[in-house]
Length: 284
Image: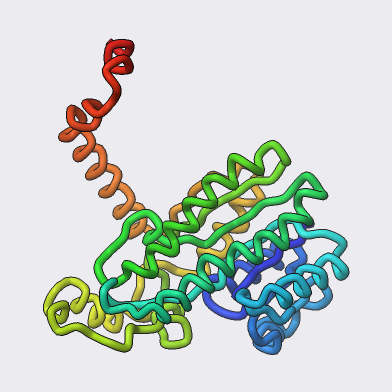
């Protein structure tokens, strides 16, 4: 039995991860802006579930939630940073305030929660950090530039954390879901830029506005399957740095890997030509 700390636990993938962790016999500190929504989602969970109020942008509330989890269960073994915020629109269309709001939740919020929980994991010399990234953390796309940039940031510091924390007995996994049939594309999670620039209307960024509406609640990924997949992977003791979820994610990642390899090969001569002469001579 382990103790999981899950943010955004009342709905979507967060709820399914919470459900799967409970079904596997774990205890869960289920964090949400309104803990009553957690009670409503899991009315029969019993004492193995601790709903806590958490706004990831509020450092004091984050620390209080972590302290409550440790007081209730004595430890935390797995942190799942799931809470997130979306923004749809061309990069140029996004105002400074809109960009900062997404970063406050998806980047600074994740860092705030992670710092608070890592002090517990380091003291234990054990644990695992699971950061919910996205296929967009590996492959960006028109209309999602600001959102995917936050996931690229999460990928970057998670890679570094994996190296930094391994000697302390702590693992790190990035989960990269494709399109899943959750409420992420609903207005409760997804925000749209308030100012649209006409030049983008007929291009890929403008088209994405319509596409997002059309695919909402028709996405290929099944969150009911994703929750157990994530929990079982972490429980296996051999979780990877990156866990892709969904056939659409796998296809997108494979396509990017191929494109990057092709581009690298095409421009290799230019790339290596910028070394100092002594480096080039030594390499030969």
